[in-house]
Every structure is written in C-alpha cells, then in structure tokens.
Length: 112
Image (cartoon, rainbow, N blue to C red):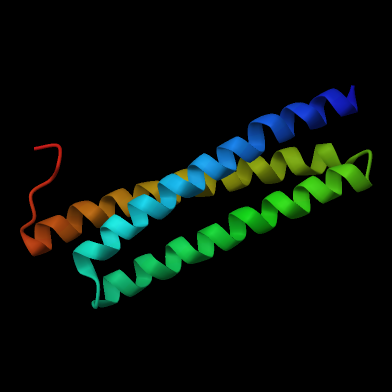
C-alpha cells in the first residue's frame, strides 16, 4: 500500500512541480519585465528564485525521504500540502504585482 501511495505522489508531484515552476518562472519574468530596475522588480525576482529553490529542494528531499523511510509518506503529504498552499499564495502575489505594475506603468492588460 505504501508503494502505491508513494508512486502516486511521485507521478503527480513531480509533473505538478515542473509545470508549476515553469508557470511561476514565466509569470515572474513577465512581472519583472514591467518593473525591472525598481525595488518591486528586485523583490519579484528574488521571490521567484527563492520559490524555485524551495520547490526543487522540497521535491528532492521529499522523494529521498520517502525512499529511505517507510513512514516518510505520512510526513511528506502534509509538507506537500503546506507547500501547495504557499505556491498558490505566491501566484496570487505575482498576479497582484502584475496588476499593480501595469497600473503604475500604464501598460494595457492582455485580457483587455
């Protein structure tokens, strides 16, 4: 049963990690391009880099922990849920920063 749960976590978790990090990088780069050179741009760049390092560090450590300990799955699942909540919050912050950057620079939103 543990092997099945671990396989599901790995088959779902790594693609979510990779796709999420690509989206985060693209969104962060777009926001940064709107306000580069300013304090907001520097904060956005650091936010994206930090989140990327955290995401992959968590993925690697969690994967290793699940292989090393039979009970690792039960520790990894809550940690993953906390990470996912933080990822959603980070994406909301980036979207709000993009909206504010567009308002400050007078750029037109692609949705308009």
